[in-house]
Image (cartoon, rainbow, N blue to C red; front, side, top):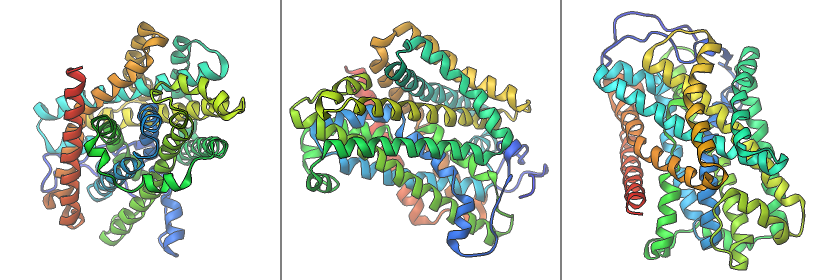
Length: 447
């Protein structure tokens, strides 16, 4: 994959492309131009799992735990629906990154005047700070549950992940992907063991994936359903995916790009189905333990840790939960840091050494998170998770609307423009997510 050339802006864009997304790893991973579909797919597997991390962050854990403990398996359908919406939007991200050769941040800079793109950059940075807030809290709680490390110190320890990313990226972007996938595998094993211990009602689990009118008629269930749906798509994931797909050297011809879009979409779809498996596992675990004994008000992560041992009759259960939470937090902070780099480079077109970019983008995200967490202390962790979701709700329209606009614009995408039926589904999805987020925000303001 050749570096992007400077020049006259193509039709549909205000500016020509300048620096590629994640320049140090741009087009660094070879693809397979020949062979079967599945052999070609192996070269594209990876970016989807980085994206999937954002759909199972500690903030999502809290909503899944609350839904499972209060309503049993009934909200599994909502988890499935939200996952299908995510698959559609992430497919558009892959199309934008490959078809237009721009990540979402670059596309905003190249399509809008500064009076629009700069406020969008500020909003994107705020969203990444909010994302990091949830992830830093999750990692710190995991460290506290497993090793007794105070929450305030745990928050500061999470800052060290920037050096881990630098080291992994220096030896190849594939190592970052391998690190993420390994931690995801650990999370899956931890939940598989816990669910085996909990012995859920599998008939009820299967029924939970079917829609029910109770979700609409029960106000409390509707509220939690809105929470699961509204907090599903993370703004930083839209920037992240459109950037990391460009680490593949997929060629520049139209057939090569079409095939790359198909392979990248397959990768993200598989990864997001894995994310659904994890989120459903959290809800199933809460339903099979807390809901089963009538404990319907479990929502805080440290509560789960303390309640699991007596319910499952094993001291290993809370340890497995703590390990899974720590892995989840580590994964999320790594991907949030990459998102921060993509957002900062894309909107501002800055040229800094990789280590300087990493430290700056990480500081922008973690310093506010550390200050707020230390200020609130352990008792405020649940409130901070809720606050982070509200901030993300506010920012989401400013990421999702440009994405749908760009991929539906033939002047910007050329022959790789999204099919009309895909755009129609994306518009409906975007409107639904935005409406749900407005509802959540109203409920938050109204108390």
